[in-house]
Image 1 (cartoon, one colour):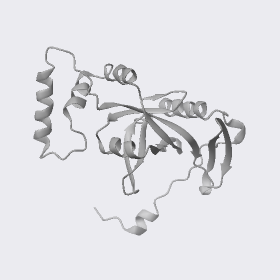
Image 2 (tube, one colour; image 1 turned 60 degrees about the horizontal axis):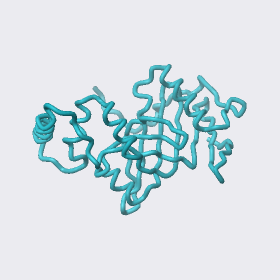
Image 3 (tube, helix red, strand yellow; image 1 turned 90 degrees about the vertical axis):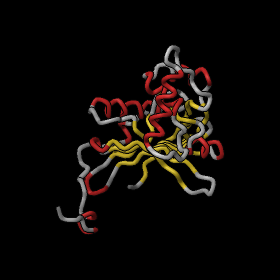
Image 4 (cartoon, rainbow, N blue to C red; image 1 turned 45 degrees about the horizontal axis):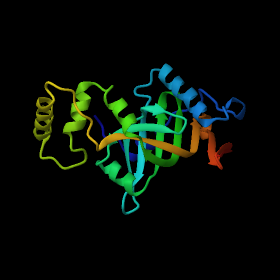
Length: 217
């Protein structure tokens, strides 16, 4: 197998011409517009349409990003769950400004979200934790997320120990495990078009009202 050169990589391109996104098609409520696109991504059977890149800010002001899963859309924002003691949890505790990015390649679509994040209530955390599969509950209890561990075997042993601890009783949600809601101040919908003349519609929140405009690609 020959090695790819920079010329080969630069030549990789797809013509985005299957859909358009015009002003007369837009729902004036960006949450409703997101739901329309999200439902279309689910209907298109895209693999894990709820996968999103969560970008946070480290203590030295450099960016940090990883993929997490969207677990709900509320009137306030977009929710996900994690270990509050993880790297992202520690970063959020010091700077609650974050960004989310959804990328639905099959539909040539992207959604960018910027805003501030807040922890969900204990009741909301309990509700989601206890509807998760039992193995996921045990994993959340066992894993010291983002901490250095010696090897895979050490992690497996932590899981087995947690399994034994709750062998005859229901697991208890750790206080350091829970959810966040990202409350957006900006949402951009990107639809790929031919000749790289993409449709970009940006919603900006001002005084509790959403307004949108078109951006040049």
